[in-house]
Amino acid sequence: MSPYPPCHIRRNHMIHKINPLPLPVLLCTILPLLMCGCMGQDEGQDTTSGLSNDTWFAIADPIAENILQSINTDDYQAYSRDFSQDLLDQTDSQAFESMRNQIITAMGQYISKERSEVLEDEDYISVNYLVQFEGGKLIFRVVFGKGDESHQVQGVWFNNP
Image: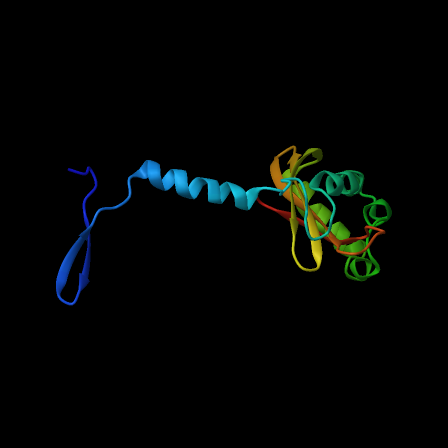
C-alpha cells in the first residue's frame, strides 16, 4: 500500500484511481531540469547592461561615498558634482538643505555604507546600499541611466530598510 493518498479523476461518471509518483522519482526528474535552466548564468552578471554587479559597485562606491560625506559636511557643490543635468534641474541648494536637515535631524551623521544589491529595469541601473547613521540605518539608492557611459547620477533616494 502506498504511503500517499490516491488521486481521483472523474471521467464519464466513473472514478479512476491514479497513484502519485513517489517523491524520489519526482526529484530525479524535475531537479535536473531546473538545474539545466540555471546553467550558464553568472549570479554577479547583469545580462542586459553587460556589466557585473561588482563593476556597478566599483562605479557607484566613490560616487555614493561623496554624496553621503557631502551631507555630513553640508557641501551642495560636492553633493551634486556627479548629477545629470536633469537631476541638477530638480535638486537645487534649497532642496539639498531641506533633505539634509531631515536626515541629520532624524538620523544624525553618516558613518558607513554596506553594499546591498544592484537592480535593473528597462532604462536604469539602481545601486543600493545599507547606510549606517548615528541614529540607525537607511537604504540609499544611486540610480544611473543605461547606456550613459559617463555614469552621471539620475536619481538619489533614501528609504527605511
